[in-house]
Every structure is written in C-alpha cells, then in structure tokens.
Length: 427
Ligand code: SF4
Image (cartoon, rainbow, N blue to C red; front, side):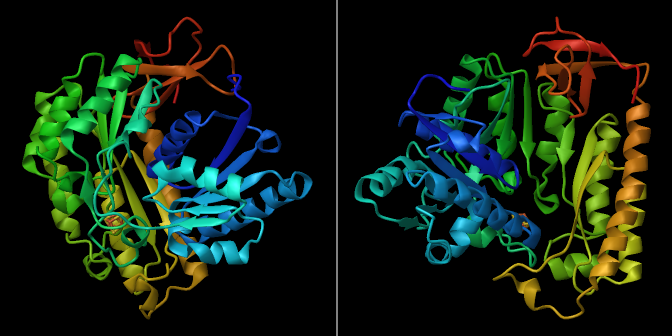
C-alpha cells in the first residue's frame, strides 16, 4: 500500500456503508497531506477509529480497539490517535476526558476538516474535539470521495429526519440535507473517468432526496454517464418508495435488479412503536408490485428482534413475512437501547435470552431461504462484474451479479472491471 510518502495512516472502520465511504473520504483528504494508507497499525503515524454507535455492541468494540492502539502509543509517543464517526459525534470531548491518550475527536460533519485538525494537534500539541453540525453541505466536503475503484459509493445526502424510535442516527448525523445534483453527477463522471463501473448512491433515506431533481431522475442521470455500467442505491425507506422509482427499473437497464428495503418487524404494533410509518401489509404490497414487474429482483432487508413490547405473536408475524417474501438476505439484530432515542425509555423490555432465541430462529430460516435461492441459479448463466482476486485463492476472482449475489470463479484471465458471462456450477 506504500506509495512512497513518509507518513502512514491506519483507519479501523466500524459500521455501515456510510462509514466505509467516510473512511474513503478521510483517506482521500489525508492523501493531500502526504499520508498514505497502511494495513499495519504498528507502522502508522496516525490511527483513526471510525466509529459506529447504532448498537451497544458496536460501541463496545470501539473502546476495545482504542485500548489496543493505546499500547502502540505507549511504545511510540509520537503516534497520533483520533476517533471519528458516530461515537465521536455522540460523545465529543467526553472521549478526550476518558482517554488521555486520544489526540482528536472529529464528528460526522467535519471529515473534510481532518487535515487542519491534524495540523493543530501535531503543531501546537493540542487535543481537539470538533463536533459542530452544519446545516449546509460545504463545497468540497464530498468531492474528495472520488477515490476510484471498480465500485464506488457516492453520497447524495446526509442525515435523517425520521427519528425512528430505536435509532441514534438523527442525533449522530444530524438532519437530512441533500447534496446538489450537479456535484453528485460531477463526482460520478470523475469516478467513471478513473475506471469505476458501478456506483452506489448513498444516503440514510435516499428516496427522500430533495435536490434540484427527483431521486429517480438522479438515478437516470447517473446511469447516463459514459463508462458507468451499473447503478445501485442504499438505503431506501419503505414509506418513501415511489411508483416512479419502481417503474425506473423497467426503463433503465443499468439500474441493478436489487433493493435493500428495511422491514424491521412484521408486526404492526411493533412498527407503530418504532415509528416506521408503514404497516406490514403496506410494505408487502410495495414488494408485490416490484416482484410482479421484475421477478428476478433481489430484495434484502434489516430486521430487529426483541424490540420493547415484542411478544411471541409479534415475532411470529415477522417470521411469516420472512417466509412470504423469501428475502435474498437479511441483516438481523437484537434490539439494544441507544441513548437519546425514544425507545430507550420504553417499558416491556424483552429478556436477553428470548432475544437471542428469536435471532437464532430468524437466522436459521433465512439461511435456508438464501441457500435455496442460490441453488436456483445452478445451471444458469449470470452476468458478473468482476471486482478482483479473492483473498483465499490467488487464481480465483470474485464479483457480483446485478442482483448483488457474490460469485467466485476460478479464472485468472477474467479482468477486474469487465462484465463476464458466468455459468453457475455450485451454490
Ligand atoms: S430512517 Fe429511521 S432507521 Fe433509518 S436512519 Fe432514519 S431514523 Fe434511523
């Protein structure tokens, strides 16, 4: 990874695609400051922990990572350590008080300020916490994300106004602000010029994008850029999916045949307590339309088990929905209360053992469904965008179908960036 510059940065990333993309933005801003990335923490001059606070477990992992990096600083006092991301935003200077070895805390709206913070920290030997929220997206705040690669994420908005009762995101990422469409298109053009074939438009709730054009029009424009072969988007909120978006799949072949649509629960009572803004039936009818029009579309979802008040019948309704939809994949979690959120004060807490049982039951069902769906592809030819070698085998390459399924193939000749016709032999 060394490109000859003198200083190295190691970034440990926790959490969602938003954080992964923020890590890319940090590297891009730091490159301008002569930092090159390293995969080896002990070689780093700067270590950043890009944090997630969506669940209690994710937050605990951050503290244990910091403990590990403190030991490196004990050996090398010149090492700079910083915390970025949602825990940084949530805790701010409290982190500096708790961890005297920390040099900087940089919140979610201040990623573009990393170079100036580093200057302040290293020059004046100050410790800095920067967690201001900004209403506007600043010029240049996102353009540095143009970092290249076969696939790239492109932020189209930040924050969220929904305040689902379990979710900390509106507090750690702020209110919803859309990025101007022109900036987004310019970034995608830069990426495509550098060889990117697939872009994923990224936001907490992309369907409520409010730039100069509608979200479906933004997708259309992205798909129209020369060199772009595939366009995806994440995350969609079921209440905001429009018919225009649903019909766009049929008009624009570059829009990938996949959608991530978080259900969270199959029980209307639980959905209402989560303040999700839809019923299970409403969710299912939108999916029905999508699946009737595009039977090959793959649908993934998020499900939380053990939300306060979730009884055995409520959980059964979730299982019924999972059986009915036959999701291609599920990201499933046990509910954990987050500070500042409304649900943290809800009574009727579900005991940990029951949460665990429900999680295991759900995951076992989904495992069966996913395997069946993958087996259905055996004997078929699918189009795979090749991403590069797999880690486990140097003569094996990996890529994804339009439906977002991972396909590995023993073909060193398949070039990264090409779309190959692949005959599926095993699932
Ligand atoms: S839509 Fe709900 S779950 Fe998603 S980020 Fe906003 S508040 Fe959180």
